[in-house]
Image 1 (spheres, helix red, strand yellow):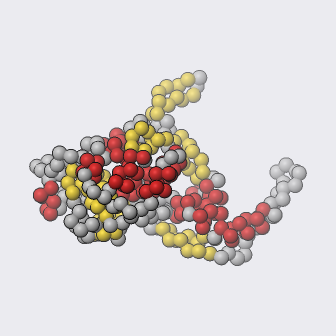
Image 2 (image 1 turned 90 degrees about the vertical axis):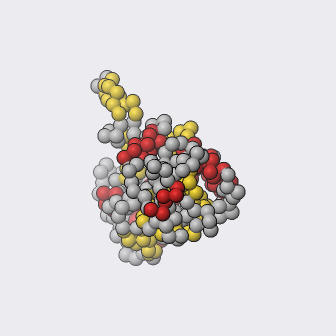
Length: 296
């Protein structure tokens, strides 16, 4: 994950899985080397479509991130590369393009647009419109492919399985839903902003020493030529892996109104006075109005 290290990572993954088998129904789209028969990239194929202009605008405005920082590489650039992708492109008028473009004007918004929208419509390798499987998207979400549908959204009639030299394009009748995990829901959705802010307050950006590359020692300290930073949260040790995609959880969550009331009451029980290391009595709330959030 360096200036184009995310792209390099994609290349390595593509090399490892290049021998993945494809269904017989795809013989017409493949040459002897198992790649789509076309001399055009996915970006060029999309540019030729009559109603994918909004999606292309977002692809050109959204950047690939390296180590929590935007690079000069956009997702449009990525889809013009030699890596193999499947793209599920929602046609114009099916999503709020102006909102997404405005989001991309800030670094945090650019990252959010990439995670929640762009990466949610792109996967590595080939998935055709007749497959029945779970597909790992670029944002690490698993979406369900079934004949004629992708995560419940229909393919546009006659506009699936469009071959490109670096993958295939499907045109969808609508935008794919973003599937929040529990932690994302708590820290993103406004209805859980109370408890979400509490959880997010314990986030830290820390050096991942195992993934970082050392370049020597200066004044007794290790110097890294490539420092990989990861986001951690001490609360995960108490609430299990609620930020991961490979586990299922059911969590009872207080709405913001209820959380704020209980939290304000709890604060009154933590009176440390003026004595150093004074003891305190924590509040155990007796009642909560609860909403149910299920993550898979």
